[in-house]
Length: 346
Image (cartoon, rainbow, N blue to C red; front, side, top):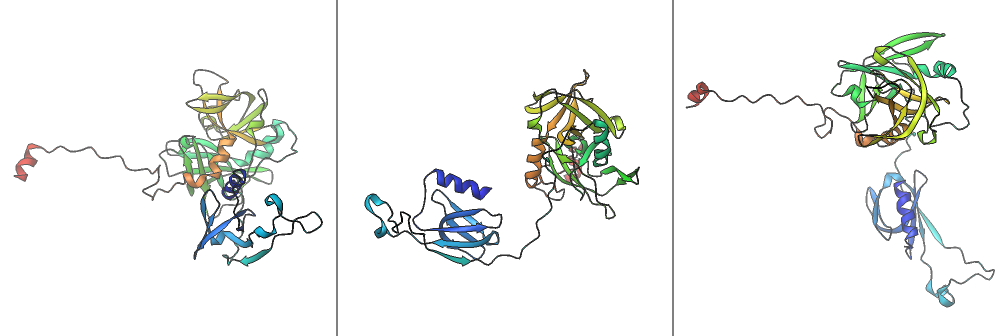
């Protein structure tokens, strides 16, 4: 996408080079420009409006297009034709660039909305989706979450795990039609965004099975008045289902936009999913107004997608001193020297 944006801007600006090379990339994108230098590990390309360095391990092929011959132009600088009204095809030469060995594409971190899904009753959807909703426990409290893929990646709220690293996740596996409650203790914090109140966790227990997951929907497609439901652990009561409607899609609180819903949200629901009647996550429940009823709020799923796509920018590493959310010990209180200490120094 980064490369495609540069290419489109160059075309819109009307910038084109007399002699250009087309560089094919692994993600099926391409860049056209003049190669200024070919280094050991990268290729430097002049796009006309900027210079771009492309790693060689991202390049599959370079096609060099010969510059047009000025003598072949007709009147008014127009290119001559080959007699049938068509311009002659440009002459190209192909140079293969050695690339790194092919690496298997990683599995998608989450499932997107599936077109064509029909609405179902809450009763049927809870049977299908309940296994993908979990309870997140920390020494200071608990919240909810939902699993993104079979490898055990899950979403919850930042405030559920804030200041904690010793976490556990309670999962209800369905075995032969029965619920099998299992607690996982090896939980890794992958990324967190304090300002959008989101955290990405990973279950790393060695004996963990493949997990049931839920799909992310489209909160922009929601309509005010549309029915939604939440699954979570309000006040520790796991697998609690509450139903309501979307009251508004653009409730502004503390500088952020939230989905407002009449589905009951209580402490412990935080980090849990808000579903539409197609069984897709449209929001992450994170707060309510304490002095009212039926005034719950959820983070729109578009913010979750953005967070997941840019999770490297929010990566968490407690051993990294540059980590923006590294948990440090509070500074000790300064001890003022006493008269006896001063006498000892003298």
